[in-house]
Length: 401
Image: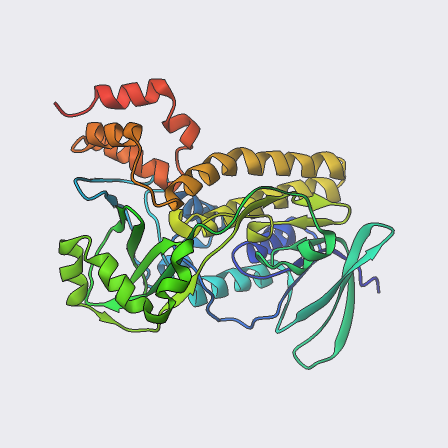
């Protein structure tokens, strides 16, 4: 029997499992491996913005995520100190965001890949990505029993995050890269009810709040990466000092109870060329952005869809591999780059510039303008479209007197 797969996907979380699921549904022979076992947790901001929820619906998985008890979020608020704007982040077809715990979400995704026909191997560690004559041909690793295994594929996809073993092997070109800008810590609080994704912006500080499973609320706060060492010894105290920058929120969280340990993260910012001979990259393996806009899961979903379409076209002979994957690359960057640049600006934690001050002041209290601002931050509307002069003029023209 020919043991060569069409696709081996390394990494089975928010990019890898959807990719394996879609490739399997298209009739390709897929092997999905991950060193983790599921269900298991991972560091994450959790938020699936409405475009990501729409992807789950297209895949037939949104009802399963909702069935975990993760509440739908139909309102985003942005507290800048002097004023707050709040609006609806979605569309008529996809009105809600969700913030499920990762041990629940990732298990749903892995199971969906298996149900679609992908061969799933949990507890599998990839030790080497095999290359012959400049082309990736497979992987060598060991299973959870320690048995050494070699598998081959027409394409090996790295969906294994920022420290991707596939990316390390192929050493893709990296561009638009920036060092980490913020460091963030999060946990879960009880008795902190909200039905809103709440974002708070202060000079040099930021935090966000979102409901998640089990009547708990995710709270994440951060400060400049340059202050990492300064506050590492007492993160909780620094978080509580940060929350005091909004007396109303500080009062709310004083009445709440932290139910789990604090988890921390900081991430580099980069794009990598996401394909080459016999290999591709999706999700954080292909590009990474600061967590402050919580776009990671949504980006991974949409990236996986684009990659699956391109790989299917190439493997099924509908288009040459190079042209199909080049289109995947350009489509990814066209969507992601404007949001990436906006994310870098927000992650600088600088006071809003004069244009933003005028804009927020103009739309405050006007629901159409506030909804538009929420859709910008949820990824429904691209920054290029939102900040187009004619759109800003229209929003200002509809501002409340």
